[in-house]
Amino acid sequence: MRRNAAGLPLLALLTALTLGGCSGFSWNPLDWFSSGPRHPPAPLEPIANSVPVRTLWRASIGSADAYVFVPAVVDGSVFAAGSDGSVARFDEATGREVWRVDVHSRLSGGVGSDGVLVAVGSAEGEVIVLEATGEVRWRSRVSSEVLAAPEIVGDLVVVRSADSRIFGFDARDGRRRWVYQRATPSLAVRSPAGTVARARYVFAGFPGGKLVALSQTNGGLRWEGTVSLPHGTTELERMSDVTGLPWIGDGQACAVAHQGRAACFDLANGNMLWARPMSSSAGIAVNDRYVFVSEDIGAVSALARSGGTSLWRQDKLQYRRLSAPLVLGRYVIVGDVEGYVHLLSAETGEFVGRVETDGSPIAAPPVRIADGFLVQTARGGLFALALP
Image (cartoon, rainbow, N blue to C red; front, side, top):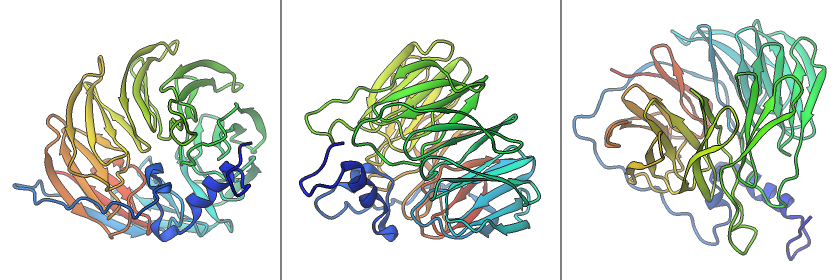
């Protein structure tokens, strides 16, 4: 393992830089190695004829601390978690708290649910699976802390650990079925990147700009695509990691890399369809026509899903450390470091609306609900919001 001048392993240094100073925490790698003060977020301009955004309900689950928690919405329920060990179930329509339990572990990743089971992960590498009633069904271990929401698909619980291993557990009893691991660069972005299970495969992005498809049955590699190739002379310059969730659907798999490219692949064999230079640590969203990307610098871009041509770019959110986007009808929705939710026109990229939450960062991507969308803030606020 490479070491810095002080003799510390670079991965350990990266981890320390990431966890240090939780109040000023940013998942954006561009912030972690800045030698000077951070750029202040770009000021927000007033929006003429702003689309009204209505708050359906709000609730609280507890602080995310240094982690990113994404609520799970399934079968009329919202499952959410906080770093203090709280896991709760809310009614999707009203926000009424159905139950809340303490799993007695410092949580660092969640939530995954299929409506029958609920899964979270801890900073000590523990995977905790609960019944939909809040009762713990089983606990198992992985090789390091869990930074992303586990995924439940059929009788399988898929968990990614911070050392880039992916585990498949039996959903019934927590028995480990398989593990996938690969060599990673000595310096990598520590991120809450998880997995996406679709069409008998598990898809995940990795350090070094790779996107892989694994068999759900045994974790075997089915194909590997190159989202981005590392370039540059220093290890920092050569960091080109897929840190957001890939998008999977309709015969395509799309992903974006930090200091790399946005790219789409043939879902059947992993052959690249197109790629375009771009840097994002947050991720993408896709609809029938467009691929939307939250860029590291704070812009939102729209690319043609067929061919990757640039269609528009909204650059007035610089340094606002945007969440991954959610595309909802004619709107593209992103959260930012000051707790604002921005609505952009999916066709033009123009601002059409904005709403403030609790003033704390929105690092988790917005999540679709029946009547609108849901965001979870770093302070632990859950805000269910409705569009016209």
